[in-house]
Amino acid sequence: MAKMRAVQVSRAHGPFEIVERDIPEPGPGNVRVKVQACGVCHSDSIPKEGIMPVPYPRVPGHEVVGVVDAVGPGVVAWKVGERVGAGWHGGNCGYCGNCRRGDTFACQTATHITGITSDGGYADFMIARSEALALIPDALTPEEAAPLMCAGVTTFNCLRNSGARPGDLVAILGLGGLGHLGVQFAAKAGYRVVAIARGKDKEPLAKQLGAWRYLDSQSQDPAAELQKLGGARVVLATVTNAEAMSAVMGGLGVHGRFMIIGAVPALTVPSLQLLTFRQAVQGWYSGTASDSQDTLKFSALEGVRSMNEVYPLEKAEEAYQRMMSGKARFRVVLKTGN
Ligand SMILES: NC(=O)c1ccc[n+]([C@@H]2O[C@H](COP(=O)([O-])OP(=O)(O)OC[C@H]3O[C@@H](n4cnc5c(N)ncnc54)[C@H](OP(=O)(O)O)[C@@H]3O)[C@@H](O)[C@H]2O)c1
Ligand SMILES: [Zn+2]
Image (cartoon, rainbow, N blue to C red; front, side, top):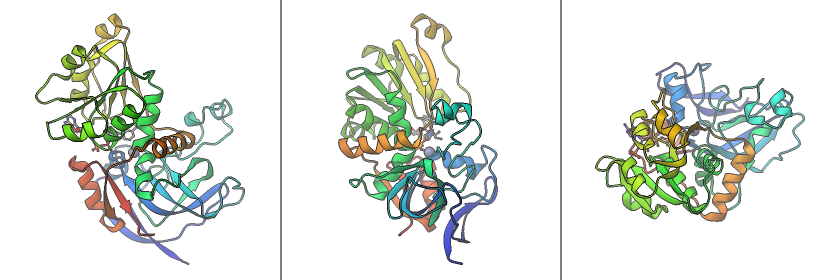
């Protein structure tokens, strides 16, 4: 049987191991994707560090771009050779109450999370459910498209559902993998974009990505500065630190909405402030394949691009540590060399 390379984690806090596996066959409703590139996301720490229960060994990776290599029985949506991407949302059952109402993201019976409940894209081949795939526009290379499958769709989809309208003051908190895409999407959507990050060094890049103002959260009080600008309609919080989020909540304007994207375990909210100014705190994650499709199309049309550091698949450990160090500018992508 033909073999492939895969990078797996065998236990919580364990190392990435490069192993040889049989190339998997797609079952009913499934598609085999020949992986070309896979982004490395902070959420890959879930299988790597065992933050959620994960069946081990597990191949991480939920920013997968490749080519349809084979289709399983019953698949009519995809043909061999088509360029596709798979994200965090790994599919839905199609028949539970929520699916039948069209709320496929909230599927009750099937919790398909790419790279968590099924093997992901740190490999030469991956099996995906047919409904979990999005078509990649010709304008995007595999390395450009990969980060859009999680970092991109999460920030794009969150912003477009946040209630902000063109001209509104929108703050993007954190300039990492998600944040640097968030700034671009927000700028292209016509918001007045304030980027907030630690230190002065990210200011020129933030401006280059489309930020109207930059706030250094180490030398300025970001909440007070946002109030001087009239108060934010939306804050998109991509940071991994709860105190950093709390420090910006005071910058919301009347009817402002604080959108939590960064995975922080708990957060203290200023309840009287929320009550007085009719503000809201809301969590958001990812999107369905059609949300990914919209993200890809918008990015191709508007020139939104992830800035990437590219590593070969064999260097997954180094790539992951680089992403976790916070020093990557800005997304880390594994290239399989196919
Ligand atoms: N909701 C979803 O669907 C979804 C999807 C993908 C990822 N996530 C989560 O989003 C978060 C960001 O992911 P990522 O891939 O963009 O990570 P990343 O590239 O490592 O970026 C991390 C960000 O957190 C900030 N940060 C880290 N430590 C901080 C501290 N002590 N104080 C203030 N800021 C701090 C950094 O801020 P600076 O810019 O100031 O350095 C950076 O912007 C992660 O928690 C990830 O799990 C959620
Ligand atoms: Zn992710």
